[in-house]
Length: 436
Image (cartoon, rainbow, N blue to C red):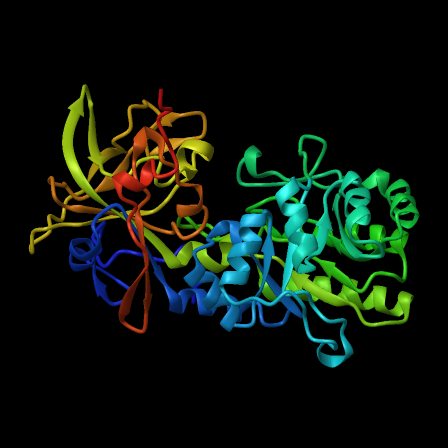
C-alpha cells in the first residue's frame, strides 16, 4: 500500500462503495450520520508494526468494543487513560496479567497499561482492583499508588522538554504541555519512587500526534539518556505514538523500517549497558484506525451565502470534532443518488446542523471557512468524510441534544452493526425532574 494519501474516490469526487459495500444501501439500513470501519485496513496497519515486541493500541483514538476485539485478536495490547477505558478493555477480552515469561526471554508484557497524569478516585480503584500496570505522568501518582499497592512496578512517562504535533493542541511535549514528568525532575522522582517502595521498570515518551521521523528520532535520543539515569531496573521502553497518517495528497507516513531500526539500536545499547533484555513497545492510536474509517452523512440543504455555496449535512462537530478543534483536513467525496454523476466540480463549504457558526467541516485552524471541490450535490446525496476512523466517534457529543450516530464494522464483505444509533429517549435516561 502506498505511503501517501490514498485516492479514496472511484472518480473525481465520487465514491459509491466502501469496503465492497454499497454506501446508499448502508445508509438506508443504518441511517445517517454513520461511522463505518474496514477491518482489513486495521489488520494491515497492525501488521505494519510487526517488528516491534509490543504494539499497544491507544484506544482513545477509537474505542468501540468491536475494534478493541479486532486488534486484540491481531496480538495488539492496549493502553487505557481512564477507568472507563479499563472497563472497555476487559469487556473486549483483554486479561489483566501477561504470561509469566515473555517471548525470546523478554520481560512479560502487561495486556493493559493505565496511562495518565493523575489518578481520579475511580481510576485508582480500578487499577488496584484489577492489578493494572501504571504509566505515571506525575510524581504525585507514585505516592498515591504506593499507598494502595506497596511494592508495585511502574512506568514513568517523561516529558523530554520538546514536542511536536499537527496542531499546537496535539503537542504533548515541552513546557507548554501538561503531560509527563519534566525530564529535569527525574532524579528527584526516582528518589521519591524509592522512598515509596516502587520499582521503576518502564520508561515512556510521547511528544505529539503527527510528528515526522526527525522529531520521532529525537525522542529515542532523549529516552536513552533518561534510561541511563534510571538504570538496570528498566525492562521496557516505549516509543509512544504520534505516527502520522496521510490526510492530503503529498503527505507521507513515517518510514517505519528506519524508525524501528533507530529504536532497536537504542534498545540494544541499553541492553548492553544493563546486561539484560529490554522489551520495545510502540503505542499507535490513529495509525491503526484513521484510514479504516469513514463518516457517512446526508446532504439536507444546498444554499448560497453571497459568493459562497454551502452544503449542509446532518453531521456536525458533535459527530466529528477534529475540524473545529484543530482545523483538520479530511478528504471528502460525494455519493450521489443519480446514476449518472456530473463530471464538473465546484467549490463548496460543508456545514452541519448545529446552532453554531463554527459548525463547518471545511475550515482551517483559527475558524476560517474554506471550500472543497466536489461534484454538484442535491438534497438526499451522501457526503463521505474520509480518514475518519481516529478521534471521530470517541470525541462525539450530545450538543444540541443530538443523538450519537451508529457504528458499523465491515469485514470480508459483510457489514455488522457494532453500535446502535442512540435514541432521543436515551439522551435523558439518567435525568430526573425533582418532585414536590
